[in-house]
Length: 411
Image (cartoon, rainbow, N blue to C red; front, side, top):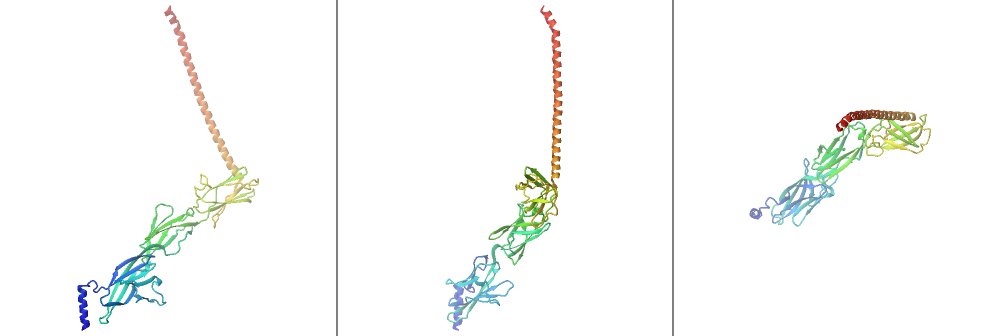
């Protein structure tokens, strides 16, 4: 009877004075929240202890979507929740109930999959052991952990090698919330955007399909940028194309004093280094001297002529009379040109003779044209002089005829 009277009295007081606490002794702060990846996530409840009561049990549960409700803490003790005796959240999770009657759960280094509904079950006990216990449950929904981007897939390579004419697909995996944006390009100023496939709300897979790879794209860099919530990831991947070099079809040897100047047909092999071996030979085409140079097809480099052809000057150990020509072998580290073109000095001389004949003909034509012009203008000049003489002679005869008339008039 006495307990009933006390209970009714408490209900009236609660309704008139302490209505804020009635039926709401455990208040979430707030009811829904987000966290930030890598930082400490703090989940708090304000405990309004009923008059004459004290909190006896504080049990914290973790309720993941499509999973069973699991207990984390019971009366301040971390519970074992797996068959292997591991603690949920490991050592990252801790709790505190302070003098301000605030229950705080802290999760260090918050991760993307820490999202869940955290439930706090509280039981209040009458200090005098006369009233029944009051039990209340309150929950806080941690809906998102914002952050990223971070690479959560295979380590990103700095170099990738493909076969010539291959159309590869590059795969990237980045974690972040909200979804990071991946853009990429080769050399074009406009970036291309990759469409992601999302797993587990925070894990995103991207596929980048490259066009037909040819040797002129060897050594090019694929630049990518991943824009996310916390930061940006910027990097590049060098694309190596495995190709077979073409044979050299045009070789020019020029000898000046003791130096040989060698020029050959160039093929665009991108930014990948290609070894050109110059082999000087005697009249029996037996190699006697070899020189190797690494050439990159790039107009900015100084080892190219204005015509876009590689050029090499060799002066060492070439003061020999038995050198009659040479050939070129091309290698890119794995493959070499299928065959080479051999050129003899006689061929070079024929080219030089042809060039000399062309020059002689050109100069002869020029001199002939000058001679014709001189004859033309000379004849024209002679005609003008003869015409002037005829005009002068005719004017002299007119003066002689007029002279007697002038004399008669005077007399």
